[in-house]
Length: 277
Picture 1 (cartoon, rainbow, N blue to C red):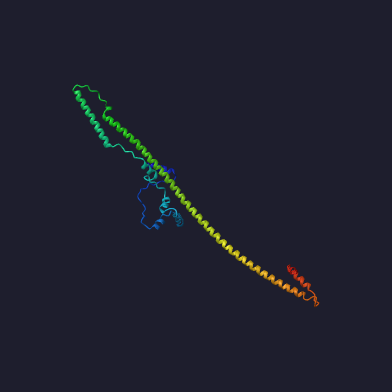
Picture 2: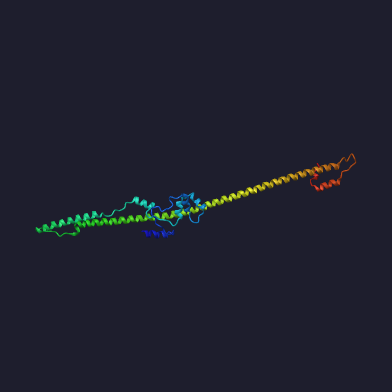
């Protein structure tokens, strides 16, 4: 049966299986837990990756799924245990009891023959004995029936054990494959989350930097605008004063407006004419 299960394992494509005993073979049971955890880290993993998986799987589970090929124990499994609990194991023929029955039947047949011989010696007509109808023949026939029944029941029981073990094997392989893939998925998901968080932090930092630059640029524009407005206000005041000086008292002292100066101001400043209502 072991060879059949081994062939089934190979056909699953998950490598050779290694039967294990129920005894613990962990030499690190009494050592520091952190050392055991680090030693249980799969080859090629970083400490960061191992710590991520430890949030979901115990160290012994990680070692189980990444410590080598799937280990199958033919003496353990939920299907096997359920079959054993629900099915009575056939009991073989009790050899001692069978011998006693044969002995008793043989003694009975012998006594019958002795009685017939005594009767024949006294002239009685003795019917020929049919060996197939003897007590011993009957006991042997019944014993054969019991042995055949046991062989049939035992064969059915062994087939049931084989079926249960095969189911446990298939389930173990599927669980092993599922958990390995699930651990890979956890690592990929965690690393993607870390990447997304890092990229988000970088975008936020860049946004804050750009925002500060925009604020500084805005403040500079405000200062430049205020300086420009002040310069324009000062220019308007100067030109108003110049215009007032040019007008003077034209009607009283005989002075005339200096139109050349006014034209120069208007040419240099398009807003100059707005000074006139």
